[in-house]
Image 1 (tube, rainbow, N blue to C red):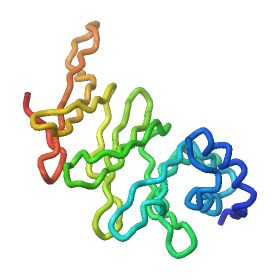
Image 2: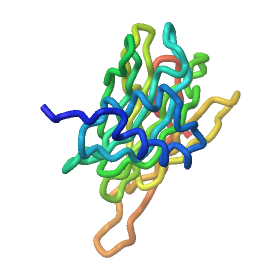
Image 3: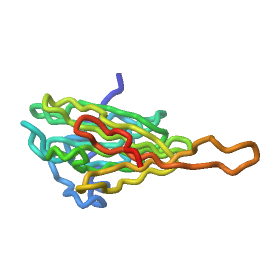
Length: 192
């Protein structure tokens, strides 16, 4: 089991990182994260998440972390008592790219949209926090290009462009876009 460094050692490094993110260096939620990172963990992105059912908004943190000798992963921490606990980890590609919060299912609660890079592909993962507090991936797909657009009535659509492999020998690659829209239960392919 890796030895954890005390928060007072990691706090100065986090303070520099947080200054660039517009966060106060003495933010208790972010200082708490310093106590749960293992030696060799490199923070790539840090985000304090909005509230959830029974959770104070300042007590949930998403961090993209590159553990020593491993590929980057997205971790979600929640404060339980006085300490932060790792409640969800996911790793979908070679490199983590971005994390946004947006209500793409129109249920009034924001989902986490994580983007990754894997080989020549862009990977999209949509993660939701269920009422019981567990996290679940509700959509994952990859392509050469992923766009978020708005469909009829303002619904969110993901346009994923990828190679079809329908070209013949010596012909240039053929690409096509597939559109996915939330149908109330899942993101399903939309006929165009």
